[in-house]
Each structure stands twice: as structure tokens, then as C-alpha cells.
Image 1: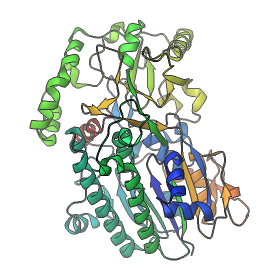
Image 2: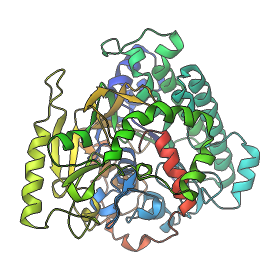
Image 3: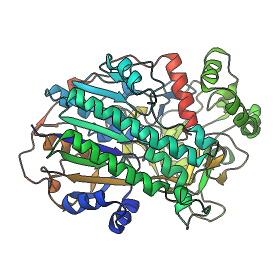
Image 4: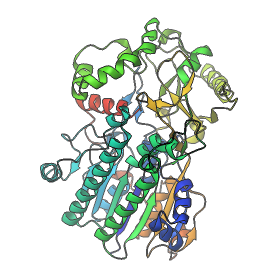
Length: 535
């Protein structure tokens, strides 16, 4: 039976891979590109990790699978809730393969905690609060894996970057990557999956923080040691070696698909959007919001002294101040619109009947305010350069379709990638991009990569592909029907043999079942996401 290896490279971009492949720095990519099918892969709006990977592995847009961000703002809530795999309402590739009796291995796919029970094995990725809950299936593997791989963790230690230890972060990253690969190779040996999905998600972090060291055109370029200056290129080379190992474990004639959830490019400036909304008259802050201006000065000292577990316990068990909530600085009774997520580019209206202290009437008032606000955001310019900070501002109905559109924000901003939007309060609306108090110089772009190689594929240039097309194409490669409600298409121009595309319904495979995150888990995960800069 044909075997399949799917390798996810979080944030990978042809802008880097292409030149490095041609120069000989990435020989495996060069060979795969020469022999297989490849091209750009359009992300979702916003081009973000959770909706991106979920769309790729369900074949449907966020309006059908229900995940728009790392967080969701539930009706009646004033603070975002961290999402989990329970929020995914569409069947994923591995569930579909399992329904056809195919053994699968899944490793490190973001937003998959708690783990799905599949024939084969499943290890969750980014969005896992810790290694005590259901992060692995079969559950019997948990103790064995922790004993065999005691240094395994979900994601590299961001505290090293927070301390400005760029060398230490690279040491940690390479050690973790080695552990991840050895763990998966052991699981492949034990379970012999017919399809394996493996995601290198720390590539995203390397490009976020090391971009300015390699890019002389960046406004904050800094000369650095060769190891730091070449950190991004060298980690791509390390990934090449890992792909070779994974292919060797899966066996000869394995079909290989490499993809990214979005692309990457330089980041210049942070835009504090709630400060912008305040200056435009849409948002009113509480008087205590001025504490947030001073807070970063002592917060970093507290973070260095108090362990993460203790901070989580304090947030969970001690009554928090209003500023403990990401949106706690907002005076809701005087606010008409607010920016709800640093990651989701999400603007909400303070709608009566949905928000606890809504001020905007549904219907005509809602639509008029949304249209007005869209125009104001599109007109927003960087005062230093005169450049618009948004490429587009979308009504949610314009970019999503399906039964869960009402879970999306009212407006979704497609930013110019040089700008990142911040949720927190600030005295100024624009500032050099940063995270943890250190420089952040790379950010997401709309187009990632797609590269297909093996017996199922021919040499071809892929044009016009999107993340929704990934799962339908993988199912066709494995000779299985495509879901009849999938938004994506089979990329027939990449296939070596044309065959009839069959369709069927997979609607009954997932109904949003499973246990939601517990209070402690959500607090731990919120703390982890704060550490990664997403809260």
C-alpha cells in the first residue's frame, strides 16, 4: 500500500528557499523542486497558525471548521478563551484516514490538544499546556515516551529569547529538534503508519527573531556572529537532514508533500490598535489603564524571578486585578469597538445581546458602524513613512462561509506584513516591533510553499493552490474519496496519473465531542501563549 509523508514547515517561504536552493545551500530542496511539483500556497485570512494548519488538514475554510485564531471570544464573555482541538468542528485528515482503516502518525500539529484517538499514534503540538494531560495517543505511550525522551517538550524555551540569549535559543532549538525526530522515528518503528504528518513549528520562531541579522535592508539590521547571521538558513538545512531521516523511516517510494501554513518576511513596526481605536473615538479606557504603560518595566523583572508555574497558580487562585484580563483596561459602557487578539487581526463591535455591556444596536446601526470603521482602518497610515498599515479590511462574511461564521470577528484586518497589531494598551500608537522587550523582526505573509515529490507526482509548476486544496489532494493520492463539503480542489496538475475524483460525506466523523480544557489547563496554556507573544 502506498505510503505518504507530510512535512509541515511553519512559515516557510519560497523567498528564502528558492535562492538558497539555487545557490547550493539547500540541495535536497533543489532536487525535490527539480523532480517534483511545487509552487506558492495561499494561506487563510488572517495568515495565522491555528486556522492555517486546521484548514490545510480539513480542506475547509474557518467558517466550516470553527477555528479563527489562538483564541475565541465567546458570546457573553469579556475576555478571550484559548481554543483547543475540541473547537474544531470539521473532520481532519487523520480522522478520515482512520475511517478508511489507514494507520496514521501525527506529530506536533498546532491546535490539536487534546489528542485525537486514531489508529496509529498522535502527539499534539503548539497549544499543549503541558505533558500531564492527553497529549499523546495511545495513552499507554505517555510514560514510556517521557522515560525514553526526558528532554522532550512542546516547543523550544522562549525564555531564552526573552533574555536576549540568541546563542542559547539555537542550542535549545537544535537539541529539541533532534529529540523530536528521534521520538517520532521510534513511534514509526512501533506503529508502522501508512501516513505520517510531522510539523517543524519552531522554524516560525527562528524567522520571527533572527530575520534582522540576515537582512541588510531591514531598518534594524545588526551585524552578528556567523552563527546568528546564518541562523535561519542553517535551520532550514537542519530541516533538510530531518526530512531525509523521516523519508528513510517511511521506506522507499514514499510520496512526500511539504507545505507551510503561511509565508514570512520582514517586520518593522508594532501598531497598538486599541490606542488607535481610542484616538478615533471608538474605545474608552479605564483610568487604571495607565498602569499598563508602566507595567512592562516591572513585569519583566517579575517574570524573571517567579517561575511560570507559580505565575499560573497566582492567576488561577488569587483574585486578579482588572488588568489581569487582556481586555481589562476597556471601559465597556463607553466603547463601541475593540481589538480582541494580537494574533487574529480581529476587530469586534461591542454589540448588544452578544457582549455583556454592549453599546451597539444590531441591524442597521451595526452595519453602518462596521462600514465606517472599515474605512477608518483602511485610511490609517504610519506617521513615520506615510504607508498604509492595512492591505485590506474584510467583513467576516467576505472571507468565511459556513455554519460558524458567527464565531468570527466582525472585521478581519489583512495587514501589510511589515506591521504587527498589538492588543495591549500603550501611550503611543506606533513603536518598533518587539516581543519580550527584545526586537522582533520577521512576520507572516500570505503565501507559503507547496512541494510534492514521489511516485504520485510529476514535475510541474503549481499555480493558484490554497491551503484548502491540501487535504483533497492527499486523499486523491491515497485513492480515497474527497469530502463533498470540502472547499478545496484536487491539484490534478501535480499528479502523475489522472483518475476519477470520487466524493463522499465525512460529516459524521466529528461533532465537536471530547472534553474541553480544564481551568488549570487553560491558565497554563494562556501563560504559554503570553510567553510566545500571542496574548
